[in-house]
Image (cartoon, rainbow, N blue to C red; front, side, top):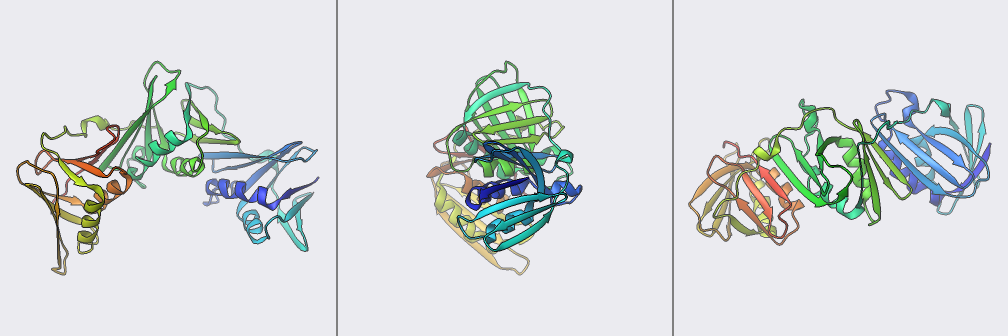
Length: 366
């Protein structure tokens, strides 16, 4: 079997699917991509058995067939070739010869029929959403997911789907991020699923740049997202997400209103002299004033004072400054509300212009 394709058509697809390829080498074939050739299209598939990504390229081949090739090597070859280069593929038993100009590459191939697929047996929920809305929803929450936590259900992002809205929730036990957006789904009951961290990471890459309408299919064990010529599938985490609503404190009668960028800059400067391991910073709220105080084992100290809008009692409380900075980076409004009920309560952060986003940061002892 012989076929040809332009390097500029193949390279973007390989870059898109490369993040899914299994780097742990659990099965040799998982380090390969599957090239499925049809008469007028080429479908490239990558999977690690947890996440699967299929991207279609429109091109004239006038033949059908399938082969697998090492993903990283094929990607590196395409990157190294000049723009508009033509790649000629020729399959010779367990080897594939790739010719481009005066370059020759022979790659090992594994049987395409052994390439695994993720099968979705039944669908429980099906709806459509604008790509930009889903990207914003995930971007506003995914940073709070846990990394390699023994509570495996925290190493992912909760999606709550009802008839008219979808809510995203992420927490690592120290902070919480919640956002929601309107949809029209075909479900009459609440559907809760947990998408693993890798699935969310790859999904964020796919959703960049564009505002087409995408279709989301949810089953008992999988989520599938279809966007134009891209089909993304991820297994779900089997576990019960904690009752996050109990963690969200009530809004204080006297919240602090601060300029988001000024507050972020002040905390960034104070954090320079915080303990490198614990990143603790003391925050003091007083009449129209916010102070950030940091010190470290070398007895070095930093103090930042910021003018804010606050008329409540004086409160002094400690936080991991990294969690506050992460949240202030994600929030895009000019001003931010900070609500603290007492010196032992969590801090509720709200964008001034979007009541759907809620962020909670737990206090820490200093």
